[in-house]
Image 1 (cartoon, helix red, strand yellow):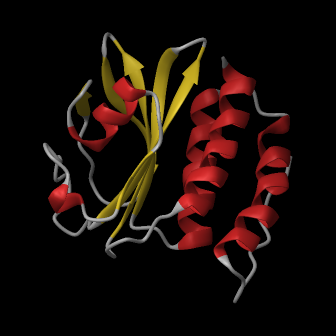
Image 2 (cartoon, helix red, strand yellow; image 1 turned 180 degrees about the vertical axis):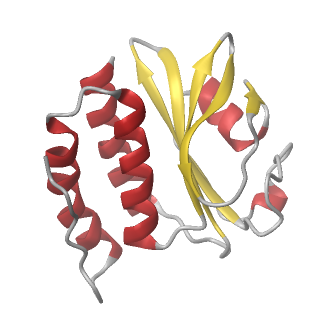
Length: 161
């Protein structure tokens, strides 16, 4: 198991993701505990990109329940269809929101969050949870984040479900 992650400085976001993916795979390879792996992925993404908030919500009893995260205090439970996380879970597709204030029904866990990306964790059309990433900057996320975060989620889903 990797005990540290090598971060690229002054590299494009895509280059940073490309460097991180094999390191994350190595980090997750021998660990069988879901919570430990979600916690480490949250920490690595927060450290690598300086995102405002990074974490997971897991499906429990028909709603999204807060899992491991890095960042300030978060909403504990999110109903399906509610906010960006709930919408991504219902639609089973990644949502990139350039300005959260313009998203109908946005849940403001923190007034400092300005943009958001949510990647659903799906297997056999069953929603398992979501990876939620917030930024304090408008329009912070794009297709590069969507593609690479989906790769990271796919690794987690394959390993744990």
